[in-house]
Length: 267
Image (cartoon, rainbow, N blue to C red; front, side, top):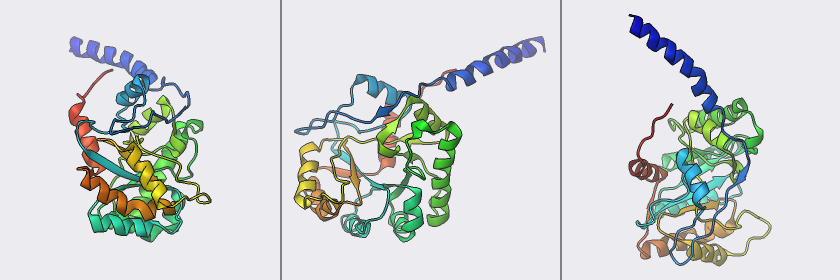
């Protein structure tokens, strides 16, 4: 009995330390960036960033030894091209993940339902698309929980595991807060300027940018508001399959990531 009481006392002494350690992550602001992939070589974010992301279970690319790629879209608002994109994905049986905001859920309910009905993943892009590093822990939780709840009500999708931070802005604190809410950050290793709807350059522009940067394990970020992307998507998929690439889902990416990385437990 005395040993049990002593053990309990020690545990009670440790609890504040655990809580303090959890709350001690820096809120220094990072803008996601990397050296672009070229000639089949993977994009690189650098050792420091790789170590930070690994610590928090975040990813931006898959195994560079496997010709698997992961197609993701950001959906801040609807611009008339998502239906076309979904048609192409369905035709070629390609899985994708769509990161949605509150505005998208409220204005494009039918398309969001279609994403889930056709087997795609709907991920969290926050409700109001803020810089999450300027939000309190409670405000971040509200942003993410509202998207998750509304997506479940709208589509029947159970749970939401993946987060893409608005504008690619994050900190160690926001990584930690998201982890505690059940999310893993999904960054990207292939992107280009495709979001300016007033400066679309044609399908060839989108196609060329993907082909220049493509690499094994690539996580592609495309915006559905881009006419260039919608018009180029079928050609991109056909060519990448011809090159031996396989399109896989974020669930596949995270499963392989978790199997590759040992589970770490610490107080």
